[in-house]
Length: 324
Image (cartoon, rainbow, N blue to C red; front, side, top):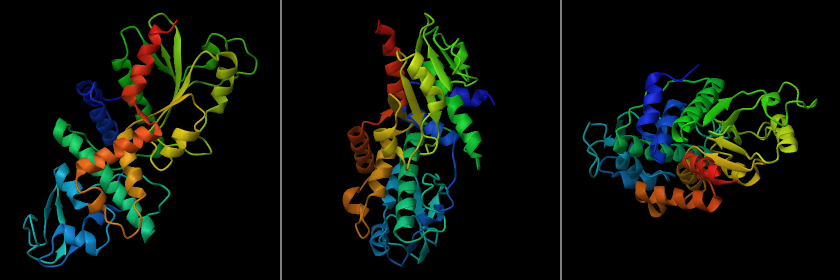
């Protein structure tokens, strides 16, 4: 299905803001986690959020949510600006809805796996919410999206973002038969395969072939069916990957056979990795006392891995116009 006018408007409003575009795409392709209740920390009477974090050996810091714009209340309805006035679970406003980011940890898992997954989900939610609040972004988050629908929506958002970001006259096409590409058009071994996304400049030059993958799996992480003829008959055309993968993001960055890999939200996935790697028994309060500290840790991790964002993809494509 084509993008709605509201979806197009969201992209247009934040076209040059990399974090805002990440927030828009992640929000529109939202997949709720069933473990959002992990945010409802149980408090003792006269206990602070920091005290409860230490007592429960949490892997996340409630200050991330409050820094992002959430308000925490105790069970009596009193805002938590110090010790609680009554025992019971923390009440968050607005309601906490985390993203389902890690398919490697089941909803039924407990122990350290549960700690890692829920902590990392709350970290990304905090980073996303901070951007949404500071940019004034309103995203109509879906309650449930079928995986295939999510992948198609991600592709369509990516195509529209590229169309609006690249120079006038450039074209972004998808599902083009490979036999329509010069150099492949009379090859007997190309067959009926189609490309995912092709980027063509204003002179009709094929600039790059791009694969869009909301998630990446080892059994379908390569696009060999279209890469083989492209690399054989058109080795001059770079082949890139754009993805929103979280649990395999590091593997994609290091092992993907595409020429370049770009991530929907590289800094957030860097923060996700950092929180996931926090050892059992180690407090997040020491490592990331604020949301800004968490954001900086994610940026450092993304840069160390060489994870590039969609803004870099646009720059790389646009700069190809200067290549003879």
